[in-house]
Amino acid sequence: MSQARPRVEAYARCLAAAGIAVALAGLGRAVLARAAGEAAKTPPGPSAAPKINETVLRERCSACHLFPEPKMEPRWAWASNVRDMYRLLDLSEELPPDQVIAWFEKRAPERFPLYTRGAHLDAASLKTRVRSFSPPGPFRPHAVSNVRLVDLVGDARLELVACDMMSGLVLLGYPYRDDTTLQVIAQVPHPAHAEVLDLDRDGRRDLLVADLGTAAPGDDTRGSIVWLRGTGGVSFQKHVLQEGLGRVADVEATDFDGDGDLDLVVAEFGWRKVGSVFLLENRTKDWDHPVFVRHPIDARTGSIHVPVADLDGDKRPDFLALISQENETIAAYVNRGALQFETKEIYRASTPSWGYSGLALADLDKDGDLDLLATNGDSFDFSGPKPYHGIQWIENRGGLRFQPHEPWPMMGAMRAEAGDLDGDGDLDIVACAMTGTPAAERNHEILLESLLWLEQKGPGTFERHALELNACDHATLSLGDYDKDGDLDFAVGVFNWPGTPKPRSEWVFLYENLLH
Image 1 (cartoon, rainbow, N blue to C red):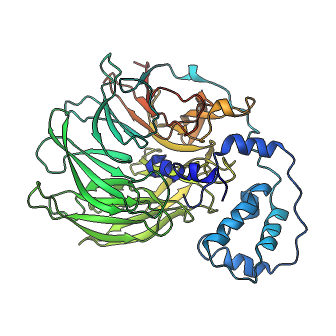
Image 2: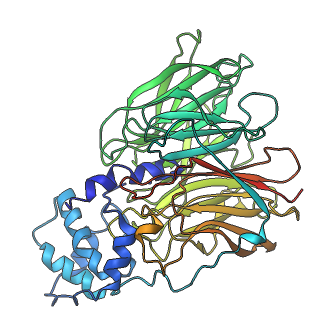
């Protein structure tokens, strides 16, 4: 394992887990600068490949996931990839690792065509006013894993809620005020995601926080689910609902069993051995002592998001899960009553290196049902950003049938949300990117879109506008009309990669839409 690997593994998949989500099955070095640098060199040619039993190779290399076709990684990355798999798995001696490496290298591209389409700044296409939000005091390292424009106060205006997974802070800001200070409202070890709800039904807004427990990938069980119980105003009392978990990436609440209280569905990302999707049935009688009973749903590790929706129109809440790692799958869990769920695979990516990072729901074509908006941009494996990273519309065709559309390319895509930004009546898409290496360390001839607006010009036809270039430190974004002027604004978080020579001091950027 390279010396750079532990530093990257300390944060990378936590990003995808946060929606970030950030995403962790064996991650590599701080990649983009190195990937660009190494790809610019002339790599050694593929070594002479001895004869190998290709049938056995394909069988062994697809036992846990889809077969990784050689074209999905550049030639120079295969030696590390194969050796990692041999360290993880007890592979047969009938497949000597050097022969396997040679087989993949012979068939792999010399390098990825990462930057064949030059990006250009088109910020004037959407008129905005940008403000930055930060806590008071001197600069401190920060990694905003989740930002939300939500009504936490309860007065119909939208506040900014942000999670900093590095320093363990949950923060609150007021975008409708001149003051751009973020105040700390709670401390949670490594918060990945926060959801506003009224868990105890007392009329006060609460926060439900998914806590990774540790930033470093591993099978530790320090993750938890934290309930920040509203006690009036913006004061909260901290309750740990569940602990001793793998790294928890997402928690969503709804009444799954129809008994009048809120149950929880949990994306326990974990790592290699620990992690699953499970449901917590609410059996609380006294909210000073909340009680939740665990029901297993899916034993696969690597879940990132678990959005809730009625997918089949039977008035019972279902949910989906974005499952990364070697699975790279979107699955639906259909509520059959009595807390029984039927699992249906909606979409599985074509390669285990797809790099899923986020999932959102939106009726993108306005046909009355919810479509899926997925991002795949995990850039923290050995070979870095991929030419197949991007944003994908997976269209709901009814009857739990979904049609994937060709992805819109975006290196390091981490999160995408849909909304009508230009006020023309259809839904557009805003997406952000995170590549893990700051612009200062990159080849300055390389331009990457870090904030992208996909403007819907006609049914299913989108025009891309780069609102920001090369600041690929956004793991999260949120849309909402915070100033109630009839147009959608949006916020993006800043994730400072460890070791960044000139980290940005801002924590959250708020883009006020000046359409109205």
